[in-house]
Image (cartoon, rainbow, N blue to C red; front, side, top):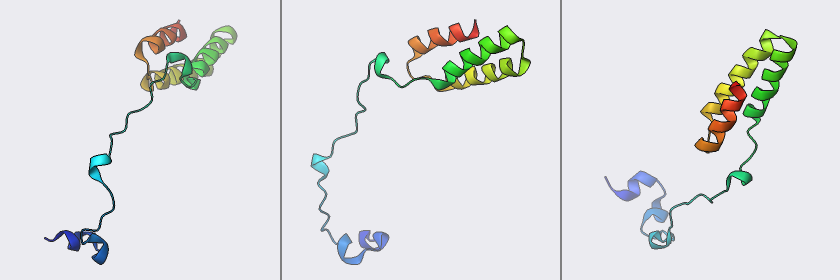
Length: 91
């Protein structure tokens, strides 16, 4: 197959591509310190619902806390810091 027949552009596919592959750079995400990371709302809600469930003996709040805790575990970005926070949420 020809290259021009795949794109369907006709004149634009004839070798007049203005992009320069030699100047393309791979994307490198910016380095963030643990203090600059966004707040883990699921972990925070797990702690809040856990405390409410224990203090007021609401089983529904305790189950919601377990669900939020699992969600926080699934979305961990910084393993060491988040593991400490998650273990505190389970306590």
